Image (cartoon, rainbow, N blue to C red; front, top):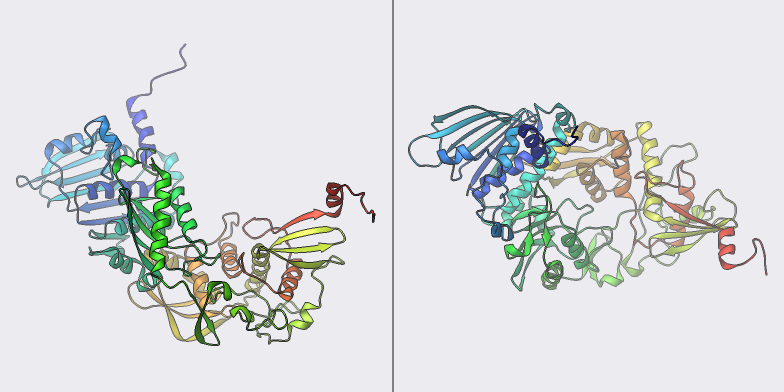
Length: 602
């Protein structure tokens, strides 16, 4: 008996649909691409339950004729390709001809359309692969596609969809990218009858960024424009010495198609070497235009990947484009000292934007204050013996008593110094330890924050004038989800219209600049997946954002303090994200590697 069988057509079609339609955002992406290819200048998307119950998209594009409607639900039916050679120079967002066929195979779908010819349009209703009805109807020029009950006929697939908020966040992120790629198009996104995005068409990218992210995002960006060998780079990227603590605003578009590509990311990172603090990542909204035959967008069924035919040309284009743009910007980093601003060369000062170390103030080496443009690090005092966290700020000079204490509980343990401004070198009779300073500080803060949380010890510091934060649509959704949790941590935000919020209060263990950065970190993700409890994820994110970073030089007293605090934690060997903190090389291993007898003095 034969084991190999040909699948029935309906089963094969459902499997193929799964390659294109993974979740609600896949449906939105395919429909938006069709609308843009149809020349739409207005696109409205309505959702219910994160798109799981309903996705309705309406545009004012060219619409479909009766003949088009009869063919558009067949697999590989497309108006965008005619012959095989066209695959080598794809100029449209969609081209496979599988979108409507795949979506209708796993949902209850209704399509209404009118191409402006005659006086009536057409309506089609389908359920799975079955045609329910096809009739004439009155409809304005354009197309409306309504997708209900996604995966109603595939309960196993439906079970693996995320919650309403998660699916909505994915869709919001995609619509934001589409709006950036096509600033002249009006985009409206509505969820459960509540407007999430409303961006009228504008004339340029700067205006679109202002609509989506506010003027604060524009302040740290510079214009980028460069052309070479038929490749053209344009858009906005971080000014020297600015950037963000995350990569949320690192967006690339190739021929106006939003993409994620390692070549582009690596080139951007390389371009900012020496121009950005190591704890910062560059922002970018960069558009790469190149001949269609030099990029392959036909790599993945869902068009999730691209491949450049000349990746080195692309890499060099971004390097040169950012370098030329940076020349017109000031390469002198501003430093705030004593409430006033002064400028010094990059090699001569400590960045004012460097995160604070949770150490006593005055912890610099003796005689170092005021040198290298740096200041004493102002941070909360360590915990008292009673386990209560003191919020009194230590004064310069109080470090002396702290620094005389040993580096940890192991006898004879000493901190030799710092390697690459990132690792502490600690030795004892038993061997040598290399400690990652960021991971170590993150572990210390995480455990302190957990104790504060268990004791309901979060106190707020009120601001005389609220700090205005302009949030992106995704951040607004996250804020609504986490608002109660944030309030219990000491954050108080007041709506100020549109997507502007006033930060009125923040946890008093931070200063207001650090608090705003930590708040944004919480709104862009609540921490490592290995922590199942949401509260712990939030505390881990706060610890990560507040911890010192690799590349920050520390005084001997600060290193001693950090090492001692680390070895008083419950899990000194691992940070909250699961990364190792300590690499230990035993004395026996060192002696055997060198060829010395263990314990020998010869």
